[in-house]
Image (tube, rainbow over all chains, first blue to last red; front, side, top):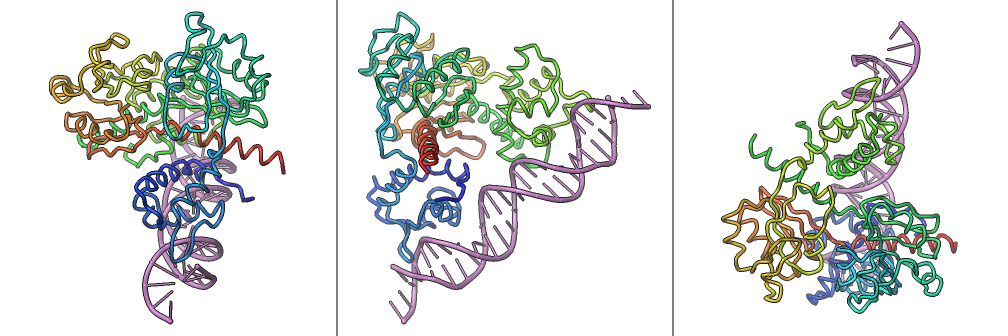
Length: 213
Length: 213
DNA sequence: TAGATTGTTAATCGATTAACAATC
DNA sequence: TAGATTGTTAATCGATTAACAATC
């Protein structure tokens, strides 16, 4: 586990997790890398190599235990533990995330939502109170929050991120359309939703151009 | 423009677009690949190489015209044109996307939202009528819709995707937590929101483990 | 012209894939 | 044991980076 793990490998882990969860639901007990390979459209060598970055989870002649491998990957990803989360911004995205119910969000406990809009402050969203932004610093002192979800306008994203980081938050999931910088011991995942739409447009165009040729 | 463009290049295009949009807003008129390199944390050679996949947009000794390069990239991505869009599913994500206002969503005109929930059918969201799912097929015959946004439960995602594709939709932006398959002349962009959260958890953990060493 | 910076080729690096010995 | 499949090394492939001639 000391070798540097490439980001490409890390970004495939959630995909393995999802696939194994589906297999588990279907009642599949064991799976070989070549069967996974077919199911996931990945190369079997790549799968074995990816997994072996973290340990030898398989058994020669048998394959992998679905249940066990899923648990190992949950461990690697750190999604077998609980996180206290705050959401900043109760607009569309903030609301959607606050209301989102998905097994993959289990363990991420949304403790509060913050906003500056007095029309929203005090309201309840999915049982979570919307608080005044001015209370954020104090709140972070009292509660141990490890993840902050940014769903603010771009103008204030970095400013809010800094408050979160100073308050001990170690992970920021940023949906503001503006990249945010973290600190030494924190990690920021910048999401740009529209990027996916733009890539979609590109490939639609590419497919069409191809047809016309 | 005949060489195969790698997906890595395509996925960087929206990032260039965002960066150039920001520069334009700031009133910057020209930029060199090395300046972009610093601003975007990319290698300057990579930037020049990426752009040259599509054409020689720069000028020796000068660099690139921000305005022009942005337009070229918009052209390449196909975001200088208009798209008719339908959203399927008026739950959290569907609502959030229907209400989303961002310059990067310009040109994507949401023509209708479909749902099966009778409590939602008939309501208005951001001025867009929520229609009965049963009307979808008919609607697609009447209107020329090129993009479908899937925000349904996973169980019906593929089924709905097939209806969209049969109705002439050529791009699907899928937020259902279940990969969906397209057809020959269509493209599907599968989004798994939670993947980003899981990667975030991984790196939080990684940073922490590192500290403890 | 001299300086700057592109476009593009060549070199390097890293990631993916193939192959196979180890072993259940 | 024989068959299957892993873990891992070696080969390949592609993407990134460096270098530089072309040229504005």
